[in-house]
Length: 261
Image 1: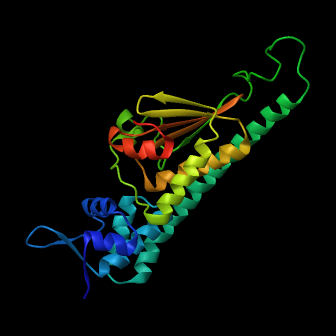
Image 2 (image 1 turned 135 degrees about the vertical axis):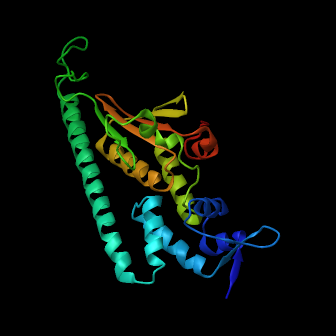
Image 3 (image 1 turned 30 degrees about the vertical axis):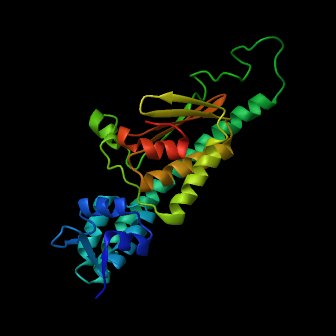
């Protein structure tokens, strides 16, 4: 039976060694130890990593993946399927909820765009010129992207759980490079960039196409990097993306957005 050191397993599966260590600490990927203390993995680790990666693509949380692995070790596929069904159904409901939010967001953008495309009034801006949306009308439309939505009564610690999330990315190889390039292409379209505590704030043109791309990419990013905190906010004249991350994630924040935490 083949065995792998951590660097060999990382190369074989295209998963960074830092992620393998994170999986071990999270109880997802056990490792044996040599007398000198080096990690050693069996061939079963390759299949186990494949299952973990597949579950991550479905948007499952680490706790859910750990539970599925425990069921999988029993060797009964039907039991794994039975446990996966409600989890996938939950992701479907969550995704449909996000789609509804983005559809409302796009509709509001279209209404603002239509108002701004009409004839401008004489003179300066006024309350009915369309440049400013009053609170009694549609108002700003916030879209907060998070893997779990805390209740309004949740304690601050729960609302800002990203501060305690492990700083580790589950993407590797071409996936990581592709995601990085996607972010860089979008960030180039920002009109302004403002450094804020824990991160930055980017301002974009208020277009439905750009709002959808930013929301989809931020949601995908949280699937592999739960330590990022994204807020997408629409004002009548701009689309604002706020990104925050713990101090330990400064290198990743800088790599994606060109700033430090």
